[in-house]
Length: 491
Image 1 (tube, rainbow, N blue to C red):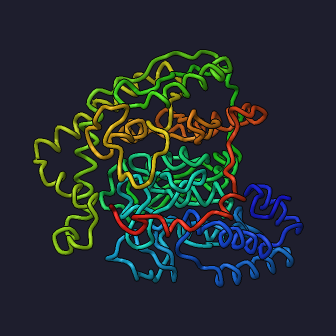
Image 2: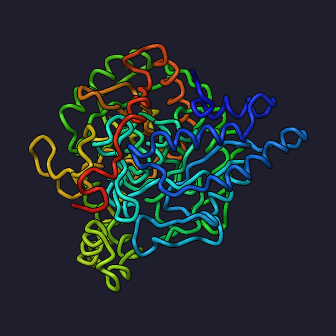
Image 3: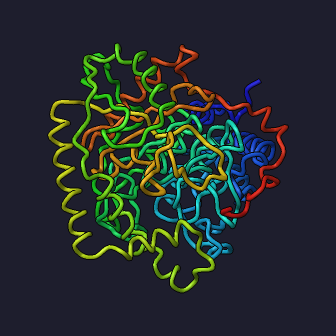
């Protein structure tokens, strides 16, 4: 029997609008699901249930009074624990902020609340979002929705697991090296990295950097477009923000796949993609390539991407966390300490070379997209592994060059600032979710959503290709993830 928490966001919102579903009933159902399964995965460690129920009662009164309703009216939300929420603990996964309770919402959260969303809790993250494996010493590790002993990826791992298990219909995320797309791929949901500035962030330390962005996560593309419509905005505090075209994302535009010229790549020419992932991707391409007007095995010239991303990412880490490492090294985990140490090794010539290389790569991408509509690739280089592995030091027996090298499929698009989405396309050979990445042209956010929605619809009737579902009943019966060794450590 379908419970209210199992409804899609769009359908739940429609039921609320016609008085067929109470926001209180929906919030209660989500709370019940969290209480039933979160012990097994640890996705939502900070909760605001009492205030959420109070807000839901007010939302119900507005419905019954015939008031104007926002696009997210009555919908419960999970907010990533890197974004400040008024009155609700925000820790960034760091013991330095273990007891931090913000006095105001960040801009993104404020916009989601203004659209009618109800914050139910904070979703778990790696320490300061670093590492792409959702573990920290404040809230512990988050387990994969399909196997709690395996990684949920990150840094939006808690959001992805909460969505996959239907704890919430919508959740926020952020993305630098794939922090939206990687956990989406690992947990069988949808994560979208928008163009820089489309979802403003007034807290980004390097205001003109295109690397970190905020974005939506959902269980399907239409729900994701609904959330994006509430997140996207102009905000003068973000120098990359600008006017947002009205109605561009909800619903996603209708796209005729048969008119598209698609580039297909398993590795962008440099990403250390696991053979298991290459085989799964090849099978998916064989199934979906006939849907396109033209599908070519090709990719942009990505030479220098590793080097440029490594330097630019590292100097951002020094800016954000250098003082913490200097003053409180005992309260900083290994990923943060190593990132800061790496950044401090670079000099002015390294930084100018990285910025110049980023520009050259960007211009090569623009030339490439003159002849292609979108690029399709795997979303992530490996199938989920045990979360005790802090990062993959080897892929198919070959050493990775950095602790985040396994994210190269994602940061290829990050470096040039192009929008990209991960959508679920069945299971891989290991029985874990497989994510397909769709990368669009500069500013092509609506196109990416439209292509993703069209592929999603075409796959809906195919048991091999459609979105896989975790075994919620098994999670209910499972023991607590907190009892697993190294749950609260980096060992």
